[in-house]
Image (tube, rainbow, N blue to C red; front, top):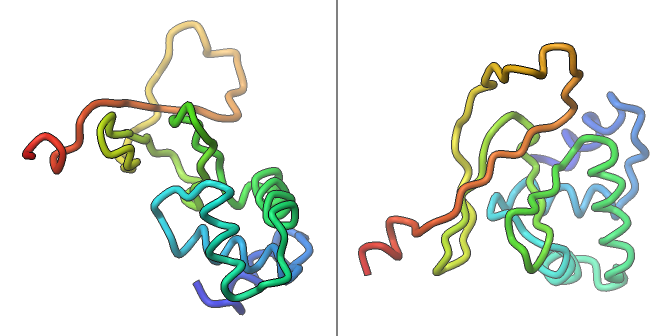
Length: 134
């Protein structure tokens, strides 16, 4: 996504478009491998050496709070981030630890008819095709 598009997207939602937020969102959006804070920091720092880990962490938290990214907590070791905020599930390979997205639909859950659901997480784990074939 181009920088101008990110700024427009932020303005639509009255979200302050700081250079830090733009750079962090741009990286997460362009890298659909579900990066963690350290990966975002190390890659954003190449272009913006003045950014600290705290700056990146704060930008991620602000982007999450305002609905631009979602945390993916499938990995027990660290929180990852995803710019795809639409309904989908995640699969983590127990061998290579790569996270894959997959399509999912909104199921009808008996007993929750009167509840207002704000989020849903669908996580699977196992072995990915690449690791299975090795």
